[in-house]
Structures are given as structure tokens and as C-alpha cells.
Image (cartoon, rainbow, N blue to C red; front, side, top):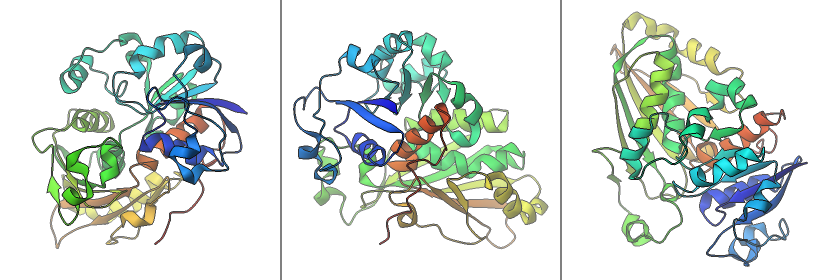
Amino acid sequence: MIKVGIVGGTGYTGVELLRILAVHPEVTVNCITSRSEAGMPVADMYPNLRGHYDLAFSEPEADVLKACDLVFFATPHGVCMRMVPELMAAGVRVVDLSADFRLKDLDVWANWYGMPHESAEWADKAVYGLPEVARGAIREAQLVANPGCYPTAVQLGFLPLLENELVDPARLIADAKSGASGAGRQGKIGMLHGEVGESFKAYGASGHRHLPEIRQGLAGAAGTDVGVTFVPHLIPMIRGIEATLYAELKNPADFDRLQNLFEARFKDEPFVDVMPFGSHPETRSVRGANQCRMALHRQEQSNIVIVSSVIDNLVKGAAGQAVQNMNIMFGLKETLGLEAPALLP
């Protein structure tokens, strides 16, 4: 059994990790930490886990974490990078769900996150954990940077177009929408039901922290710099992300082969579903599942490719992808613990 620790267990991502790992046949959760809730039984905070865990939240003690085979960090940025060197020295493997190790340019990281990076050595060694791109590197990694939710939906939708050099990499647009759980569990006036209900808005339109991560991933796929406009929106639902992606074909005649190209690119990917051309993926079709569903569209004879990509921001966009990465790192069946279908309705 893989002995797992979770640092930062009181947020939505932490409880989603617990929910998924509760039925994982090769994992035992040794500890789940929270400085603010230390001593509280997990099931008292999250009654859906009654009968699954006898654990209580505990202080994040290094000796306890070093006894684990793998530690998930479901913490705000700045926490993991301070604790990782000691865990790495002890041979522990880490999947970081925060943004600490996603960006390779640490000056860019410091600019977006408002603090200097404190673990340059491990930022350089960390593997960006998008399995559909970096499966081999993830398998050998000691430290995996779990991708963000928006970047997962956006990158997967653009990948086949950029990898095959079919579109202008300087003119990419990602118009994305997320449910309120993407903002975390902290009490914020702007996230109250009375504030977000019956409303819809863009935010971060002048620049969002996920933009450099998206740009970095898409540049890797394209093999060149990219120009991407990314605008996120908040919609009045709990879970889910829909990203409507736009790219301009270099040769409009290539459009006829795009459906086959997308299907071939993802045919062996257990968690990517390319729907029939012209379909409209719904966020509810992936709710609670580690799945990305996407579909291609074209308006009349336009040379603009439209891709609609949906995920559950807490699963394929966070905890589910983290477990997928753990499975790869330990040589397990990649889908282990992640095979349940989405919740519908």
C-alpha cells in the first residue's frame, strides 16, 4: 500500500482528494494536515466521509510527512516550496496542487505571485504533470507540479492543433468559465450565493495567474512562442469549467481532417473524450469525473477552428489529475480509483 499524506486538507481540493482516495485499492491515507483545524475529526467537517476515515486533522509535522511514500500539497502558493527540500532529501515523492512549481521562469512566477521563489533547484527539477503530454517524465519524477484547472482544459483543447502546426500560434483565444468552487473554500463576499447567483461576469480580463502557465504549456506544444488571450468568467454553479477555444487555420483545407486528427491524438488517453463533430459538451457530463470532453466546430467556411472543452475543476482540474499522476509515478494502472462515471443529474 502507498502511504499518503495530504497537506492542507480543509479546502475543496483536499476533501476531493480524500473522496477519491477513500476507494483507491492501493492507498492508505496516513495523515491530513490543517493548522487551523488540528484535532478536528475529518468526518466532522466533511460528513460525506463518515465511515471512510477515522483520521483527525493534524499539524503538518515534518517527521510524519517524511514517513509517507507520497505527499499531496493542497495548499495556497508559497507553502509547498518551503517544505519540499526536506521531503525531497528524505526520498518522499510529492504532487503539488498549488502553483509553486508550475512555471519554469521564476521571475515570471515572482511577478504573478508577489513573492520570490524559495526553491529554485526543485522548480528546475519539477515535472509539469499533464499526463497527456508528459507521462514518461511523470513516471520518473520525484516532484510533480499538478496543472491548474483552466490550463488543463485549455491546453488539452489546443494540443492537436499546435503539435501539428495547423494554426497560427500567435492568434489563440481561450474564453473560459468556471463554477464558484474554483475560488476555494475561504469566506469571500464576492463568492456568497447572494453575490454570484443569477449573475455572470468576466474577471482577470487584464491578466490572470493562469495565463503564464497556459502560455508556457502551449509554447511547449507549438515549439515556438505563442500569443494567447485568456479571459476567465465566473458562472453561478458549484463545479465545472467550459473553455471555448479559437484558433486560425493556416490552411482552411486542413479542416476536413481535424476530427480524425483529434480522435487519433487522444484515442489511447483514458480521460479525454473527443465527441462527434458539432457536439456541445456539458459540464454536468463530467461532474465528479476525471474526464475532459471536447468537440470541434466550424461556422460556415470560416478558417477559425472552435474547440469546446469541459472538465470538473476539482477532479481533472485538480484532485483527480493529482491521483492520476500518483498512479503513473508508482507504476499503477493509470485509471485506478478514477473509473467512476460522472454524476448526472
